[in-house]
Length: 123
Image (cartoon, rainbow, N blue to C red; front, side):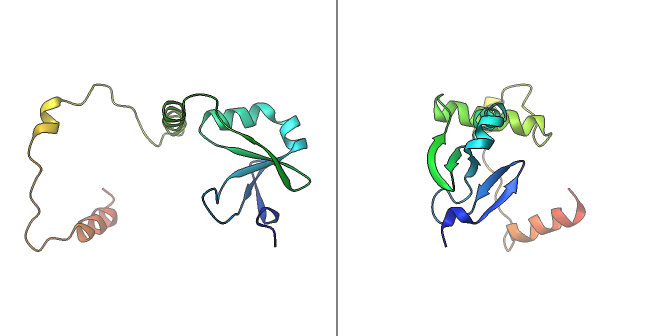
């Protein structure tokens, strides 16, 4: 079975289930691309790469034209901020904070136990 033939619809566009590096790349047909180009461009601005298909076969890839490191991280941060998942810092990190010695782990302590405790108490 062709890896691109197994697709589920997400937000009007498809998410191809492939093996390998781009296992969750979004796809769009030529018709979807023509009718929803603005929406696809917005997704690309947010760091997505869209694979354009013609009758189920890949013919083009829509990617950002800006610097990948600057544009991708900025687009992701903007998207996460709009969704309320993160909030940008209002002030730069104090330099002395980065120079302070890190706290020592307690003898016999487990990071996993602390994490599970925090999750169970809702902190």
